[in-house]
Amino acid sequence: MTSTNNSENSELLGSVSQPRILVVDDEPLIRAGIRALLNKEGYLLQFAEDGHEGLELAMKDSPDVILLDVMMPGMDGFEFCRRIRQSEGIADVPIVFISALDDKEARLKGFEAGADEYLAKPFDGRELRYRLRTLTRLNRYRKILSEQKRFEWVFENSPDGLVALDAEGRITNLNQSATAWLGCNENPCCESRLLKVCLENKYKLLESIETSEQDEVKSVARTEIWFMEETSQSKSITLEVRYGTPSGLGEGSIVAQIREITDQDEFRTMSQVFMNLISHKMLTPLNIMQGAIEVLKMDHPEIFEEEYGNYLQDGLDQMLSQTRKILSFTTYHFSDPNASCPLSELQGIVKEVTKDVGLQTEPSCEIKVADPMLRMKLSRESLILLFMEAFGNSKKFHPENKPVIHVQVEPINQEELCLTVMDNGISLSPKQLSEALKPFVQGEKYFTGNVPGWGIGLTLVKRVIEKAGGSVELRNREDSTGVCLLCKLPCVVIQE
Image (cartoon, rainbow, N blue to C red):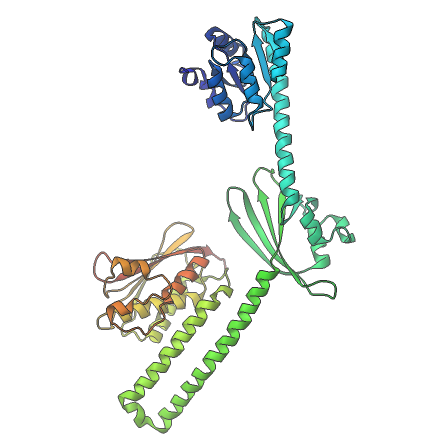
């Protein structure tokens, strides 16, 4: 094997849509002559000087046509042809024998080995060009049909309903699963071929969300949730319908993916009902206790002049705080994923949380964003949660519980903001930094020895921000002691 690939195969730098011709011949003059004949025909030309090199190139690049010499040292053309016909993926590639052997026996042996055409040397250049045009065109059609059959099998056997639509939403094709969900066999409305009409005949639209999800395969433009109530003949059904434009189907082509999410929807509903019940059962007695303490304060204020009275109030406050954290951690899944909060409200939220946490010094707030219409893709309630946890930890980990906190917002790019909360408390060890965002890890026990918390606050903050499409990082300050909580958040512009 020589340097044929480097010197003779330079044409391969062209477009991958061009037909690929592999020439396998041990004679340099024959290879040069074929190059001269085909150089301006628009082919990608590949050359091999023996059967072994030719097999390697064929397996690697799957040519559209192979031009093959018969008499070669080592592996002759007949053996090469037989091996090609036994190789998965390239067994159907057209093979043209080009040989000085022009007797009937040689031709028959070539066709028996699997050849499609047989040209005798010296061959006519025009005949070679005409035959190659026909063979490359037929082989491309064969590949297209093979891919189409493979796609049709996947389309028909997908457990999801798949519906091909035109630009106006009319059904052009649908698989068996989609037929079952839509009831097209018994649904006369489907004669209109409008997917919306077919859905409305059986289901009620609960929600329609415009999205911008995109990957290498498809872009999803809209997601709909449809619901069919339970009847005496069937159970209730919830469907998710995602409309997208798969790559490669051409402009205006739309595919709707229909998937049953009844179990997920029922689980979500049951979880929400359960957590509402738990919330009521847990908070009601605590609120009763709080009311009793308020009555004691009015009727027997002397109790709270003693230290143990304050212990009672502080203990109840901690129980209420931790209970609300636990309930927030388990129920946040049901918050609005499209919520946002204007930057103009940030200062007010900081003031509100400062009072709730009991900070002696209000944190400074610096917003380095010029656009007044910019909003963080996070709800106001989620921002309050973020600052409650950040400020509370800053106070907890400061040696005197008197932290100096700075809040800063600055743009990362046109689609992201960085919200930073930094303090002047203690710095954390690498282990503490790595574990701080994990659930049920209590950093304060390393500092104070006390374990008043459940270790879920920062984990909840992380979960909230990640659900909004952002990320969270905790690191030590470089300019002084203390830590920085860095939150990367998507931003949106909403015109008033």
